[in-house]
Image (tube, rainbow over all chains, first blue to last red; front, top):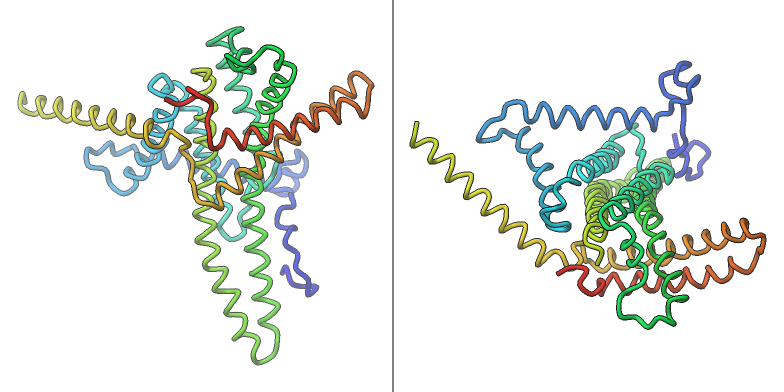
Amino acid sequence: MAAEGKTIDALSQFELTHAFGPIGAAVNFTQSNAHMLIAAVVIVLVMTLGMAPRAVVPGRFQAMAETFYEFVENLVIGQVGHEGKRYFPFVFALFMFVLFGNVLGLFPYAFTYTSHIAVTFGLAFLVFLVTTVVALALHGKKFFGYFFPEGAPLWLAPIIVPVEVVSYLSRPISLSVRLFANMVAGHVLLKVFATFVVLLGGLGIVGPLVAVLPLSVNVLLVGFELLVAFLQAYVFAILTSIYLHDAVHLH
Amino acid sequence: MNERDDFDERLKQARQRQGLEKGADQAGGDGAKGLPSSALNIGMRAGIEVVSALIAGAGLGWLLDRWLGSFPWLFMVFFVVGGVAGVMNVYRLFNPRTGARK
């Protein structure tokens, strides 16, 4: 399909199309939105059905739900401290949404909504707003002292303050670009090697033999992408926790 | 019944102790950076930090310029500020703010 014109078309997989036929087209409901809905439903199902048995010795499904919960809880408490427990639902929701977006996107015919900068920047901007509001609510005006480290000579303020402000403003950008770039790079790589399989497979008798090479690379890449999917969700969650730590403790 | 309650109580205590221990361990050992630290990850992170600080700086300068109508000047100043902030972000990557993490 990608190799129809004997070219490598690695970017068309990120194009948005309407889902749900004419109804979706009327309200601009895309397959990206559809996958977000799927992810949300799957997350709710995993957590509610997984915890439904409430067994003392968890079964496989319950163990998975508990592992997710404890993983994020340890992460938040480890970074923010025990007063960070009230931000746990926020970090947990973000972690699960990003994780399921990344992993669902690895299924054939699925769409990776985390491969769009609009989505990741939306999430990162939410993190930025929440951390700033938390810092302002907890510390009031003292929050602005964050932009000027104590003990620095006062005449350096015109240099330090803009640099600190820009550094603070760059947080949502780096948070969103990291996730977006990782997902796009992975899926482009997968598509390129998959196209190699098709192109090389058509090269007469030796074709199928040579095509085994990119195919095996793709098998490895899928495993690697699974790792990246988990890792990026983890990085997103831990950076959110680090920013929350800065907001709660201010230094 | 009494024995069972006692067991539950002890189990709860043990769990709590372990949970606290784990949390303390993570805050101490993992908290320095807490991020995966392979060379590729560090490089990727450093690159993204620089680029995003540049984007933030240039964007802020451009917005200020559009507001004040002084096109190239603030943009140029904040481009440099963004570069400085990027370098500082990378520095913070390896040396977190003093007292930022105990």
